[in-house]
Amino acid sequence: MPNRKAYTATTAAIDVEAAFKLLEGRWKLVILFHLFGGQVRRFSDLERLIPGITQKMLAQQLRRLEEDGIVTRTVYHQVPPKVDYRLTDWGQALCPALDAILKWAERREDFPSAASSVRA
Image (cartoon, rainbow, N blue to C red; front, side, top):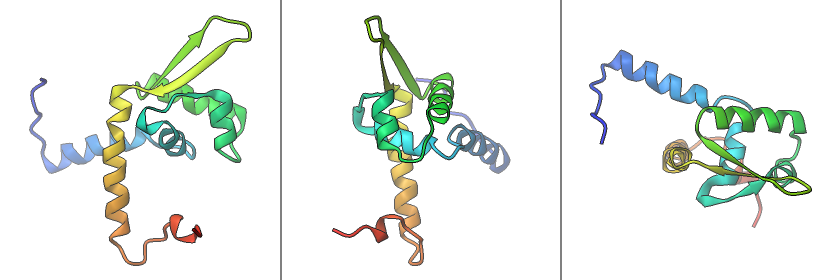
C-alpha cells in the first residue's frame, strides 16, 4: 500500500482541483455513469444512450478518459471491428465518490435536481 500523503489545506485543494479537472467536460460524467457497475459498452451503445452527443465528441471524451486511466478500450480483431469500453479499477473507484457528492448536494433543500422532474 502506498504511503499516505500529508496534506496542507493548500496542497489538498490543489490536488482535489486536479482530480476534478480529470472529470471536466460536458459529457464525461454521463459516460462514467453509463459505465459504473461494471458495465461494458460499445461505442454505438454509448452514442444511443447519450442524446445530443456527436460521434466526434464521444470519441474525444472516451479517448481522454482512456488517456487518464479511467476507461479502458478493448479492440476485438474481427470484421466488422468491435470495440468495448469499460472502467478501469481506478475509474470504478470514482462511483462511491460521485455518489457521495450527489448525496451531499441533495441535502440542500433547494438543490436543482434533474431527478426531481422525472415522474414515476
